[in-house]
Image (cartoon, rainbow, N blue to C red):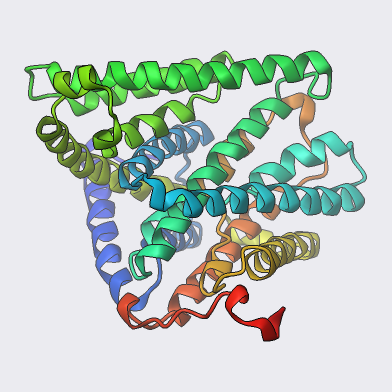
Length: 409
């Protein structure tokens, strides 16, 4: 990293953590998500470095590595935040179909834009469109503290489902022979196997946490989660499901009615573990997000804005993403659309999957500037939605659903 000494690197690293903490405080007052402030800070640092002719470079693999770790932490944190129950079934159903339908329609529209603009193979265009169509849970989940509980839970579920569904679809499309009957059977078998393994590994991880006498628990379990994720990816299993199920199991243990398991892992012990995981996961996610978004922002050169093609294609993609979300929330889900319709950020998962596109599926005429443009503009749109959403959660008067307003039917 340039010619910085070890001491200078330590100073820079600790300084960035302090800046990130200050951004978190500022975010609570100005309603601008802290991750966006980090992203803009990285861009500003890049502009300063270019202006001062400093040569500082980072390997794309480092950004990808932080992105994968951050993804695992964010999905685990989401699982630890989600409560299940009969009263949540409608919310879970709505958020799942919202994530699924918006992902499919967005991918179709973005694929069409890339196909007609670049005139390259349709499958390649779909592979590029898919990461651009996934809602970024790494930006959404840390940014919803000002919303009421219903909106929070809906967005957490939706962002988590969008990540998981997007990753599953991406693995399927990039595995080769994507549209043969055999590949569908193999992929379906892998999906069922992942669900079964998720329960088994979750109980195993739970056993390690609950029964070990050592105080050092979290990073042992986290290392096992990373191993499971990486191993699953190597054999094309959607292993992110395992991490989500583990978090859900910890946070909803009282719903497990198996007497043997309840005796083996009493609720008071589980509650203690839940608090421990909540604390450590939040701290670790904060650290990973800090360095990922600053480094990613630093990798962005604003010179790409000088390209007319980047701005035109990027604007068409952003417009397609926004229209799909707006129409679905307004006319299908039939609920208040503000500020949820502004939540179209693309971020960590988009970048991670973009770096994993196989060489055989690369678009020769696709500019990285389009990716950067979409990430920046969609993040700014979400930021505007949060700024305009001024009322406190308990002061918000929800708009009546369509079923309660016959004049709109």
